[in-house]
Length: 328
Image (cartoon, rainbow, N blue to C red; front, side, top):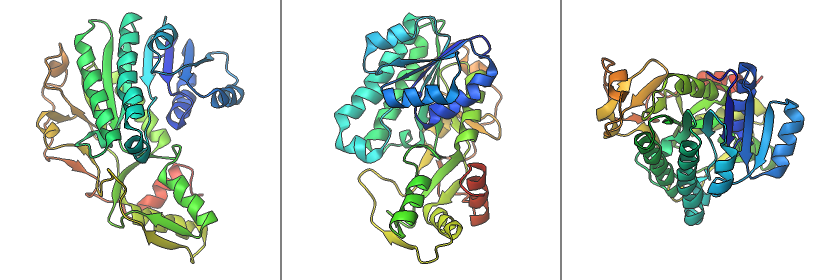
């Protein structure tokens, strides 16, 4: 799919972008364009990869003119750029709106104007029944991406929704390890809290799968394992060898859920089981060829997909941390 193709990655210097590009370059693309705001991280990435197919454009998805220019001649767009931290989006809602909603609309318009083949939008479990401003902006982004399939007969748009990815910038594993080293205690907002988790490498592999197999208009939902945050903390404390490290419960932050969901009860009405790695949420919009593509697949047998169910035990948590490179 990506052989001899030109690919643009918004937010390409972040954790997702770095891993995406690492897996993308061996697929023999003609060019990979990293579009982001950070000069320093672009320079660092350029020095790290030293690949002539990798080019960099300083730009913001809020700047439609610059984004449209960057999309010229592009075949595929991976839209990763976002303001993603829940407290930041709660404190700066207008900034989150401009990046996550207006910026996504700019991606759509730039892709259509340049006859891009497909746009892949990275979403989050927080878009399902959102309880915070970040989740709301990503839910609106999903709606815009799905609807965009009615705006162009040639450019296709697909969403991929996932939970927490181990190892991304500011992820809980990095935070907990830093607290263990520097403070000798781990802060947990609520000891009952659960989350979906997947390694970054596995998340990108599933992202490629959805990119190849999607027809446009659907939301691919990653089937991710779940764990109690307190169990994750215990495993990291045990791995550190510092038995004196304590846990401190601080209370939930504004907009934070105890349990996340990857699919809401309303969405379950139009969701099918694609395989053992994905569910596919079909829209209520009448998008050509979409429902026919998934006709005959079984409907989901549950009304919601919550992180409080099918929890990993500590051995399983250790294994996923090893696969992610956090434990030896």
